Length: 469
Image (cartoon, rainbow, N blue to C red; front, side):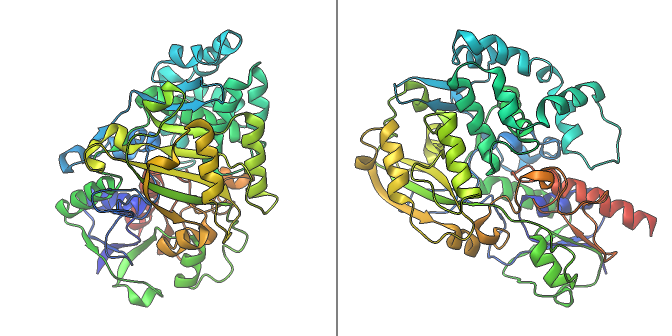
């Protein structure tokens, strides 16, 4: 009998397996697709030699992850590559606000009215970032905070809606950039805890940047897989699980799946019936004949570029996708330029480019024209550089990854109480009514992102259960 079986070889499932194998337990991972990866994959989606990331691309949470930082993943080929600027937010006049590793440079890009406000906002947290990151990404209620006063101060600033926090800024340059940071959660800006979302992304960028993995996001999954195998664990691919009986006997079963799939496979009935899935995205991957011709020079040297002229435009786009059930006419775009940092991702002189805009859950339309019209506003001539494109709306995203229910790449709405308490209101979010079944996907705390912390935390819960039995 195995000690633990993990269902799903995404970053969280692999991390859970590694954490248990490091403790001397026998572990096997079962993955439905032909390779490990989940939301961290790399494929030739357009033309030969152009290597794209179908889902995650830039990794501010990955490089800052306490779980990943505690593993020797560099020995297994994981290398973080940085652009000159982690992120830029261009404006129609050709200027841009930036998220730089330097707080001073970031503040200066907002203009004189808001530079001091921004410095005062992040100053209390950045010196204690590592302790703070461990505190709010750790297993809930199992350890004392490492920086309790800093965590309390962070809560006071971050728990209210981001719209409250942004009232501190006088100009829209700062509000637009911060709105874009919050939009990574794919939820309206006025929700509970959204200020914390923006602060986390800003602090992560200042602390260690927003890098890509050399060779693509698949390198993260490959490094975790190789490390797991060296620890004695096994990974079985092309192995779809429909019920618990499909798995070998084990003391614990850990699911890197959606709550919906877990309930179906483990026979939990309506246990997760109240779990909500959120809006989706329309994703485009481009093979380009040259770099994106951004008007703003800052955007040309940034790894990630947010595309939305102002905070009201961003709020309207999110509101349309999340609450009004329609695709926005002028979508807010999150884009990544991997080949700016990693030329090996495309043939010499060519580039890969990654972009998405927000759309309702399950939406089956085509946002390509709206996305490219928005890009042309900030990068005139962009369409002339397109060699090929690959598109994926909610149905295609859900088909590629079963965790993306309705195309929700966050594996559950990141809004309301579900931002903090997921997948249920529980003091033990990784456990289920079945004593041997656990959940470790992004549907569990601390939520979406390629950071492995949901798997890390779930592994601790499993370890405690096994040790007590």
